[in-house]
Amino acid sequence: MSAEFEEFAALWAQEPDAEERRIFAALARTVSRRAKMIYYIELGLALFLGIGVLAALFLDQRPATTVLVLLVIGATAWLSWKRYNLQQVAMIADHSDRERLLKNAIASAEGRLRYSTLSLQFLVPGFFLGLALRGTVSRDFDFFFQTLWDSFIEPLTLAGAVAVVALLLYFGYNNLQLRRQLERLRVLQAQYRQEAILDDEQKNI
Amino acid sequence: MQWAAGETALTVERPREDLFREVSSGYNGLISRIALSYEADRALRLELIQDILLAIWIALPNYRGDASLKTFVASIAQKRSISHVTQRAQEPRQVELPPELRSGTLTPAEIALDNDQKKQLVEAIQHLRLPQREAIVLCLEGFSFAEVAEMLGVSTNAAMLRCQRAKNALKTMMEQKS
Image 1: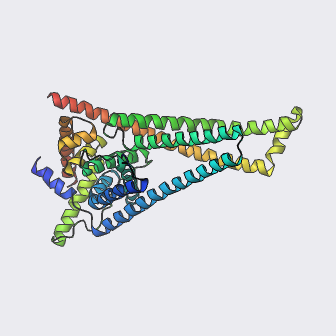
Image 2 (image 1 turned 135 degrees about the vertical axis):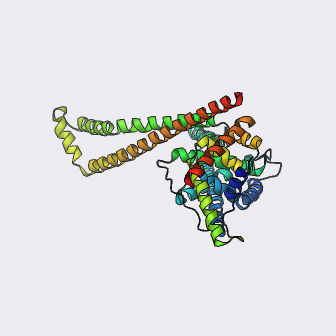
Image 3 (image 1 turned 90 degrees about the vertical axis):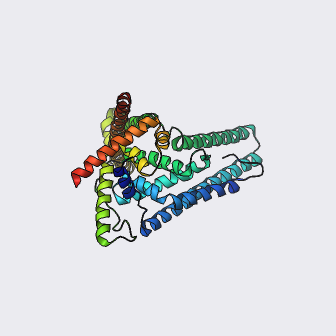
């Protein structure tokens, strides 16, 4: 490339100073420690679960317990395998194909947005439906609204209402973030496509 | 990583740790600069560097040595940075650089000039469109067009064209700034 590029490269490739290197080394130590800690916690939990199910099998030898234990072992093994695969896919696969990378990211963001929107839509009706069902079961239907009001001023219901508001705020914020993320991903996808078109056009010149 | 007969989880952890140490000591500049090209805010950049290091730690058992370790690290750093850009709600554009970028034998005036030019270059890179940004950063890091092409999943010719377009855009922005 040109001398100009060499100049840019020389400016760009300056190594970080001692302070930056120290911070970087500290971050690397934290990452390695945290990753190892997670590994040992998972190993410990797996051992705990294994000992627990084997003890249950030993102490209670009914066929139903055996079936349950086998189901727990099967489900744990399957979940661990799925988790491992997902981790590998997320970190390694498609690392060079930006189109596929963005497509997967868009599909994933859309899925999370659907879940978040559904949660937002059903949270309040679900809460009132729960209250109404409680009222119709415990009292006469003629006093439906009175029952609803009575339920609503109970401390437990009020605490539930506060939790619903908190969840609404959380899902609302989450929804907004996901919409922005999706927008960014689509802009990025368009940029990559435009770039590919430019590559083709210039190749043919 | 395939476990040989008699090997346990603890014995296969060792090479990963060695490799990780090599990455964190040998490629700190590469990772920091890639993070800098995507994140202007210092606190968020440190978070991004940590995320990149974690991604590398997780991916290291899959490193087979087909490509150089530098290529492997740069590839993961680029991919993780793209995710970071798309997940962030806001993208701050203030550039914060260390007070002294170079401490060698330059005079204070030369250091100031150099730092100013580097600041301009970083700002210009951060303003490039992402497909061009990742191509030019890899070129500036000294990767060949073939290596850049492999990392970006495009042909060598396309990688070269992208670097060329990015370089022209950089040049225009630098001229406008100065």
